[in-house]
Image 1 (tube, rainbow, N blue to C red):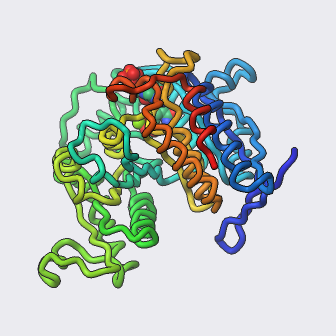
Image 2: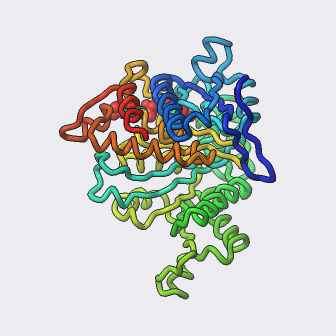
Length: 405
Ligand SMILES: NC(=O)C1=CN([C@@H]2O[C@H](COP(=O)(O)OP(=O)(O)OC[C@H]3O[C@@H](n4cnc5c(N)ncnc54)[C@H](OP(=O)(O)O)[C@@H]3O)[C@@H](O)[C@H]2O)C=CC1
Ligand SMILES: O=C(O)CCC(=O)C(=O)O
Ligand SMILES: [Mg+2]
């Protein structure tokens, strides 16, 4: 295999000029958006480093392609490759509703312990938005990625497992659950909450952000989401006493005037958060939240900056990072060369930044912004943008590449 491995030395990433990076093409629209993304990234790296740097892509299988070629949905080799090469990128993978296989996306996150899903939501000038002031939207979601009901620990109605659990709960705890109920379990641990909230606070500090909001439904789910919030405040007091203050300290000690260089840690209940991010987006910056809330919030916030076609992300542990779009496989558009590749392209930009290849990352951002400002866009933005020139996925990639410097 050509190229060299990305490694970690004393906790710091060391990136060769020719890193090997595994990729999963993905199901549905995955191949279309991956092809576009790869072309844009390769062209940007070439333009930015005059051939001194080059990514060596290696395909690894997952999803329908893996099932059709090697008879497995998520081959062991795919997990091993991500473990070995540390940085990867993936297209979306399909998960059936109600039955069938469990989410391969969730399995990847759990198997590789990618505990944080980081999804920046930033407005790119020229993108159509339902907001009056979309430029006020600049948030980064830190979604816990391995726990919660989202982990899929559940049993169907009338299964022996569900009945056994219900009988135990009814007999031992004095609660009453109907014997015919399906059962799902919502585990939230101190360790899982702390590592997620710690990453969010560290990000806020290193990126000069103003606040971290813990979004939860802890009034109702007291010992899971309520505990998530409590763990967060305890962690901040213990590990970041100089850098983080709570909202009550902000008002009691500083009369609401936030001192420079200090992060405010606050919490909001999930339902009202969905209203406030729309009506008062300036009040939100970094948002740390359990898995299911983060899933819902990601797509909702994406709408404010152009839709899920514009929403990137990174699934990370302390060493491994796998970049992926927020959206799914949009099966009705599969192989039509139609959808917006920007989410995966912006995920690749996050990947380039993670490698320290900021010149290539900035080059793509600028060319993408110029393309959108020229109103050359895919169908999803064209239908919201009067006077737009609608182009295919591949043509949108061409338009970006032609604007690289
Ligand atoms: N990380 C992952 O791999 C994820 C996988 N999934 C999986 O994807 C499958 C489909 O899920 P679904 O709920 O339909 O959600 P999707 O995100 O796949 O699609 C929903 C809608 O979002 C819009 N959309 C999605 N991607 C793009 C894009 N690149 N450009 C423009 N518009 C886009 C389309 O809107 P419109 O119809 O208005 O044009 C599309 O119909 C499911 O199996 C789900 O489990 C879902 C989310 C993440
Ligand atoms: O795993 C899936 O199919 C859905 C994942 C998802 O919606 C997400 O990661 O945001
Ligand atoms: Mg989702």
